[in-house]
Length: 303
Image (cartoon, rainbow, N blue to C red; front, side):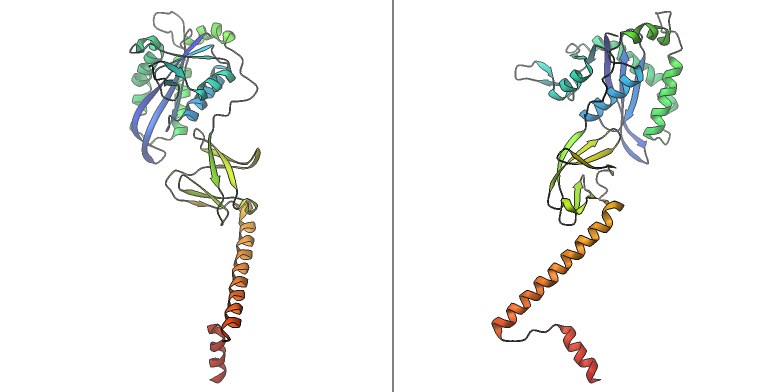
């Protein structure tokens, strides 16, 4: 229960969820039992990294006291003298779950050899039965859990025990999880335009019209593709984000009637302003200004 090791595996571009896109595997392995956790994603963003940690902790039923990383940019930063330190976001996350982030020795990847061997074992035993198929993230993550449960029953080479047997000793040593999950979502400031929409990653989403002209906060979970919109500390709504670059326009049913009412009010205001400007022109020039419809009615009456 003392140490776990973490790494990413880059699978390159794969046909996932109906298109070719980058596929990654997050791996966490417990040092004593060798029990592992794998989660497939299409991103290695910081929030995704943290979200995968949470899923691993929940899978194990607790958190280790130390986690070992390589030189991943979402975990460590380098100062001007070449010293590496955990970044602020990872420190906040680690403090919440009570573990210490450690970095493996420079040019010595074998210092986290347990997770490296775990990656090799996964590539040789799980991935060949999956590669080349029409994949979805849901399918991959369901299949890999079944595979993990199967290998956990088998003896670990050189240890004469299975991962499950060793985990019986390790689980009581893991730290209990806090009562609530750490909020690792990416934060974005978004403006509500005159039509009562916000724009995020080329897609537009409707907002209740009372927020027209306001700047709101959007928190995005890139692991679940769920977003939550806030006015200050008050949540407005949760919704699923569309794929970046699709240029979709999403109008939520709760907003539709209210937005149409606002648009009609805006249209009436424009008509009143135009009428007022015409009256001013008429009084200034002394010439009566009539709309084309007036002459159409005259022509109709003369036929």
